[in-house]
Image (cartoon, rainbow, N blue to C red; front, side):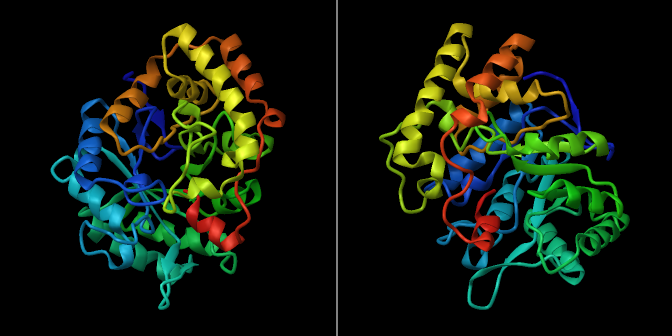
Length: 344
């Protein structure tokens, strides 16, 4: 893995170009083995990855690790356990903003009074005295972003968090939030096959000095070439609900992945490594967080920093996955409330 560093906005924190998204170790992508997940985290640190991403809402319904109620906080507990004794070696990012109500339903909550409560709970689960990058996972539409970010700035002043981030917000929200306190990172979906951000949000990030942290940078594994049109997703794998993975759409999208596979093979790399390298070649500070729960793939992802892409290569890949060539939208037929709490 390269020794290059990516700054997180103007926070003074920098990270290696490829991070690790830990969500799949707890839910959304089928069953996970806690021992293998912990081994994956340890391997990530060993190969040079130092940017780890989680959220308080990530948790399996049948959580087999820790004491998280209904799985809430499962992923934070797992990550905190895995990095015990190595906390100083990593930049730790987590999120708040979605919680379980008394009925066990997920609701959005970014009220100022909840910010401090959520942060303290995350600190306890992670086993640390500070969070390096703290995101609002999804904003409660009934709470002005200025109030939420103001409360986060108070946590920053108290030393409980080092930097403030937002997730999946538009340009106007970024500007409003930045008027209250410096925003160091925006986490949103961005990859070769999901490029909605390019219309407006990316330019706003550049103007405001905000680092983009792409989640699902491998198209939820589609861009690795390991998913094919005949793949059957289990009930606990939400990709089966997404438009890009529906039969007709994915048959078309798989042909684009075949083109990517050929492009990568000609250069001696995997398609996933090329997809990550394309993100790193964008004209902005970008720190992708590909998710995996496998040792093999965390090693493979780390090596994406060694893929040489020329300007012509970058342009070729962009045209290969031009938005009009990709079939299916970002999310399926779910409510906005559901979408905001299950996408990253």
